[in-house]
Amino acid sequence: MSKTLHLGVKYKTFLTSNVSDDFLAIRASGNPITAEGLVRMYNNADLVVELSELVKIHRLEANSDWGFAAFTLKESFSFKGQENNDLSSYSMIFKKKDEEWKIAWMQRSSGNTDLSTWN
Amino acid sequence: MSKTLHLGVKYKTFLTSNVSDDFLAIRASGNPITAEGLVRMYNNADLVVELSELVKIHRLEANSDWGFAAFTLKESFSFKGQENNDLSSYSMIFKKKDEEWKIAWMQRSSGNTDLSTWN
Image 1 (cartoon, each protein chain N blue to C red):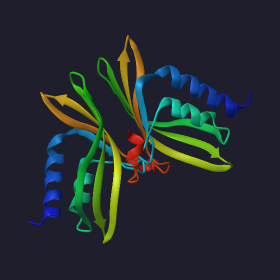
Image 2: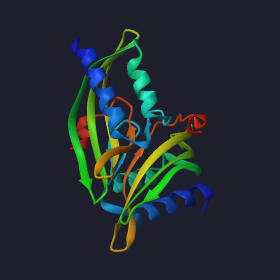
Image 3: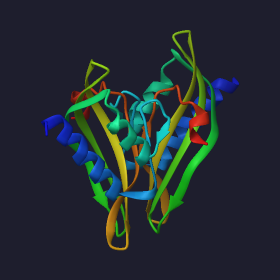
């Protein structure tokens, strides 16, 4: 199994078992996508994910049953052969249900974050 | 006072008194801006805000001291005479401190949300 294929499979498995039933991700456009939609995207042979790296955590906090994280990811991928090298900022909300933390919501920015603005 | 100027003044007053000390807004680019930065933006004579209208609330929930809202705004404004008509999706996190709800975090998408994807 190639490294890139492996990354996609890991991501899909993680996603499916770690999101709440009503999870949605807001894309850079402002349109939502479900976990199933994200998995379908990763199953698309036109998408080859090369790298998804946590560059910086800006905020990470929780109370008894809600959590919140803000971070920037470096993501390299090609879609139909077109290379993308993105730096994107995410806000992510977690909720604890039956003693397990699940990702309940996510919003992703466009891929041109300037990391120096986060200092 | 013109209608557009009035909207800007209302927004600035609301923002200043309703955000937490560590509030940040993530812009569509993925870069953060402070409440002071937003107020400076609204004080810029080049920016004329014409409309900021709540079009749809997608999610609104809270536990004892955290809250979360996701919504789409219709925003019309001009910057240096250039007209913008945006539909943008927001994620917003609230926290209760001393019995008062404050906006603790916000992320805004780019201005091209397709509302039909939210049905």
